[in-house]
Amino acid sequence: MNREQISRLAHANHPIKSPLDDDSVRQLLDRGIPRGDERILDFGCGGGEWLLRALSAYPELHAEGVDIDEGALGDARAAANKLGVEERLDLHHLSAADFASPHSFDLVLSFGATHAFGGLLPTLVAARKHLAPGGRVLIGEGFWDREPSQEAVDMLGDFTDLATTLDRVTADGWTPVHGHVSTRQELDDYEWACWGSLATWALDHPADPDSSQVLETATTRRAEWLRVYRDTWGFVSLVLRRTSD
Image 1 (spheres, rainbow, N blue to C red):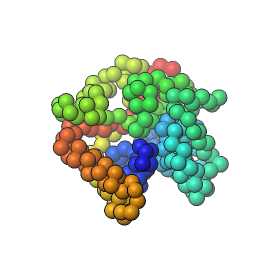
Image 2: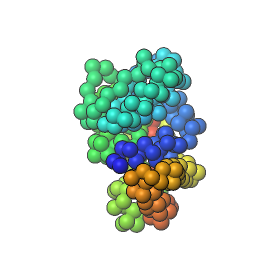
Image 3: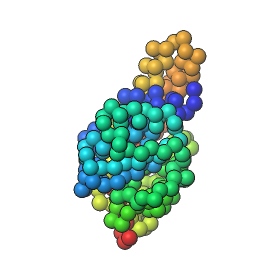
């Protein structure tokens, strides 16, 4: 079973692929979509959950999503049809770095996809290319809440602390207009949901040839979370505007 398939199983009960609850997602979208008739773009949209929620909440909104997972895009199309928002949604099967559009966007989102550009600041560079004057970026990024072990750094990446993360963003010409630091409840709920969903699938499909691999992945990832990074890793969501366009 490939990485994309495992990710889809893991997020079956937590379709927002970040440690955010429904209220936090709604508040972040409200801050990123002040008018309600914006055109928005999601880099690495997966199953389109952010876009579907935005389209459902704002009937004059238009949205585009980009992802390399064709199966996830198929899920997004099916969900859009069910919700009756398919005419306002365009999906593109390609890497975020290769995306080009004749349109500019009032809001560019990126959650769980900054690796596609090589990190937070390169993702913001890419977002700026697609951003309309006065537009906003809604982006999520990890940070170290406490000094991490080398094992945690090797596992998750070379993040900085929250203050330094914000310093780098502002030094790059962006101004935060809203932010949310995921709570311990959100962080824990996300991890339990991901690895619990994987384990449940494996136990429900014992005859599947991938069952043992999926169960082993769930067991390993849960242990890594609890033993390596649970007490040190945090997640921040930012609504950003260019300090000057």
